[in-house]
Length: 54
Image (cartoon, rainbow, N blue to C red; front, side, top):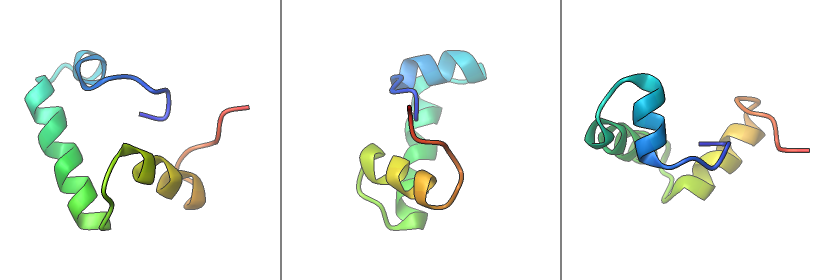
């Protein structure tokens, strides 16, 4: 997601369905109390889970 790719591209990389990607993202948003992809990316940067683009 940090690369800005769509759910379909994520699904293809992970060999899962696009629906499964959506379900996982919904679960992640809920557990981390986040509202969208942007919030998730900021969360990842702040917690050292991803590096901001240069």
